[in-house]
Amino acid sequence: MFSTKNNKILLTSFLILLLSPIALSSSIHDLLKARGLPAGLLPKEVKSYALYENGTLEVELQGPCFTKYENRVFFESVFRANLSYGSLTGVEGLSQEELFIWLPVKDIIVDDPTSGLILFDIVVAHKELSLSLFEDPPDCKPQGMCQVSTF
View (tube, rainbow, N blue to C red):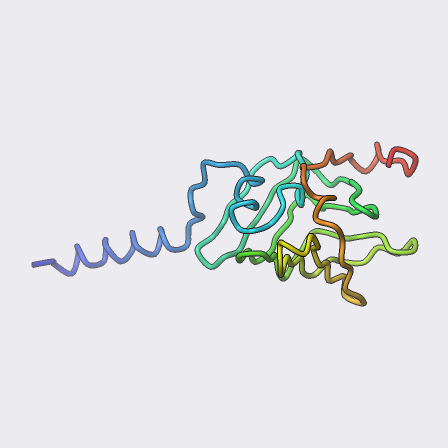
């Protein structure tokens, strides 16, 4: 039978595995596609990422940066969200420019891939954008390198 010491070791090992990120060998863009989201939601400049057992996705970028889909967006150095099939909810680290005001993106949802639309919840409104804007991971430019004319 198991001794108390063996039970403690087994329990400790289980807790470490439970609280550790899932080991991922594919790219973040492959993971997004496998979860019903377009690969181009996140820029090429992803340094590392982790997907935790509770569904939390944490993405580290090479630094804060700007890119453009339909409007300009700003990624902080760390992007976090709860990843489930077809959605990123509770987004942190992403803002979108609307009429010269930067608003945080809270949720990104693809309800029906056949519709060709993706929904961005930007706190004060829901914006539907074409999925075709997110086919390929965009380049993301550091803050000092970004100029409106480059987009």
